[in-house]
Length: 165
Image (cartoon, rainbow, N blue to C red; front, side):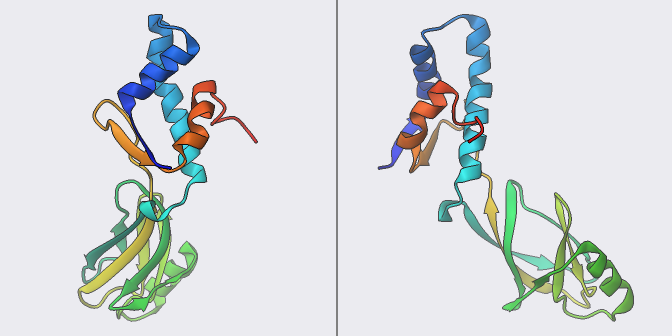
């Protein structure tokens, strides 16, 4: 069963459960929520987190920025043809040795970028499918729907959601 819980109600639930309302403890509640949420998000990999974006790879562009809140790449394609994932060294070698043409390989260049090879010889339409991080709860993002909140609610309040299994 899905439950909609606001950030403010979660903060209040933690205070009530712990029977503490001193300023030092209240100041730590956002950190407790963030740690629990991070742990839960690591366990969840749902279709709600699956994101598909379309972009254009420009001529001679070998580095492409990853989207905000990117977590893991599922697939990439250019004009409907899948790009194959290769090591960064392989991509560098392909960029150096091959003639510019439609890219057929990609790699993780760093946490925020991908690299492609061969070097694009013109602009190409790309489709990228990836898992995104769940937007964290805070004062500005009050509500989230988490299917398993009932399962994890007691763990959050007890601080067990981020303990080792």
